[in-house]
Image (tube, rainbow, N blue to C red; front, side):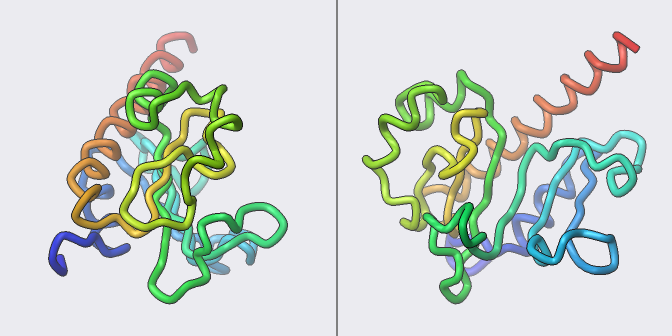
Length: 165
């Protein structure tokens, strides 16, 4: 790790080392839409079939802007990427100071392009997602904790679903 900044590869390595995690790096070889190529999706994957089942990820890494949809983080800058983590309502509120449903009223209070800051996701905050542009000294340890917690939360959800089936 360079200083306390986390690289994209370090985040991928950390997250895939967690138990039962599948990763999908979108590209032509796995049938992903071209717009998503280069983005990374992390899934709780107890069966080793993340590529086939394509469940909702618990975290993603986005490496570019999506014109007309998601450009607020200005990810088209060299070396800039954004880690997105599904943390749920309670932890979202703890991290950003308001519940996910109230995010539209608070969105203007933060710069979604600022690096190394935990913010409500520019598009998916209402679903309990947070985001960090280019994690660094201020956020790298917390990002690891949040990725671990998101994986555990997703695993618990998978277990509950399996019991119902």
